[in-house]
Image (spheres, rainbow, N blue to C red):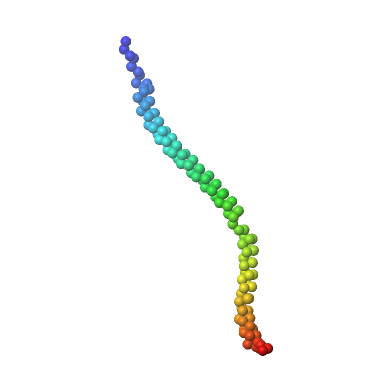
Length: 111
């Protein structure tokens, strides 16, 4: 027996491969690119989460260890007051020295 010949408009395996082959290749390319981009997005998300945790830890450290604005202002006012006192003492120093010299010169022993 002789195998029957398919009609001219019949779909053959070669026809399917010639149409589906490029389509399958394009889908594979798109999925490969998508897979790589998705991997990079996941990696960036992990880095962002790590940076967020580090920033939160730094903010906590700053809140615990660094002086508040009110503390800085209190220290500044105390230092300014003390510096003003020292300045007044230094400005009066020549007068005190002159007074001591004058007392020394006017001192007469009873001997």
